[in-house]
Amino acid sequence: MKFYYARAGNHFMHHYLPLAKFTFGMGDRFGHQGQAQLQACIRATELGAEIIPVWNKSKREHTFIGTEPSSLRVEADAAVKKLGWKKSYHVDADHIRLETVDRFIAPSDFFTIDVAESIGKSADGADVRAFADRHPELAGKVFIPNIDRPFAITRREVERVANKFLLAVQAAGKIYQHIAKAKGAENFITEVSMDETDSPQTPPELLIILAALADQKIPIQTIAPKFTGRFNKGVDYVGDVKQFEKEFNDQLAVIAFAIQKYGLPPSLKLSVHSGSDKFSIYEPMRKALKKFNAGVHIKTAGTTWLEELIGLAEAGGDGLEIAKEIYAYAMDHVGEFCAPYATVIDIDKAKLPPATVVNGWSSHQFTGALRHDQKNPAFNPSFRQLLHVSFKGAAKKGDRYYAALKKHEAVIAKNVTENLFERHMKPLLLE
Ligand SMILES: [Zn+2]
Image (tube, rainbow, N blue to C red; front, side, top):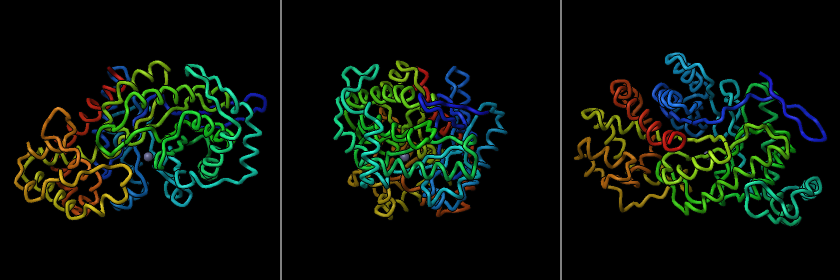
């Protein structure tokens, strides 16, 4: 299929693989839960919310587990075949950069281009001025439908924002061109991610970034900004929900506006990274998406690995045993496991039970502390976050871990599907 978009005044054509309105990014560290994850999409689709699965795995995850990017394609294809899924599905090269993209090109058809590293590095002064000259519409009062007050942006502000983001946008352009050359532009979806950076991007900044991405002729279909508040791994949103709601609405308005103004693909939508478990913002998100008739991409990577552990613990016997061993190993490696995730976890070390205590727990106690049920007084967010970043500990177990996944497949699959469907898809898109 070929799709085109034209830009007012100077028409140019672009091809891209179109992306559906509602998509769920699903991570599967150990590659055994593809079917259980797809089952959640099937349930949602049967109930009227068509959710297209996108399997994603980053270079870091592949390295920790010892897998190649092609293994994710094999898993996705097998799950789809086994369950007879007839709709589209995608394989996402998650957070790739120019140095890491190559091994992902053949097996992936969705690329999350990570340019966070270039954000904040000064762009070429002449490029910044040329950008501001090319976009006089961005300076002054910018009226955007569905935003109560027009943005008041000075030319200086346009240049400040351009200086901060232009290098990142140019980097995205280079990576996009590299993939397009190797793969053919019509064969993949492009996402640009800016979430792994220090400060959130405001709605006016998002508008300027989208104008710059359009200049690079990137047929971007999802963009992952850094939102206001903390998006910690595997736990609820921490921040001002009202403020988040306002910004989320404004960002949807900016996207709708930029699609028209800059001829970006009509399927362009927000991508919410670390989007799993953010229960307190799902309702405002659902309302906003409805109001704008907008789509969304929700990334839920690590939540599935935690369900794997919950399933093992729930199984009891050797399943519970291995879950306890993984926790004990995590407690011995807290510093090492937490370091790469410092900006996306908040662990209170005083709340981590000693391994000797956990070793005496029943299945019920272990799953109660780990499962994300905020109504359960036994739920322990620090315990959960530590295990979230400790999948390397499971990888160390090698074949024993994989054998346990096979042996306890049924109870694990039930937890994986229910978590995605009941706690995520339903409150976000079905209620
Ligand atoms: Zn991300």
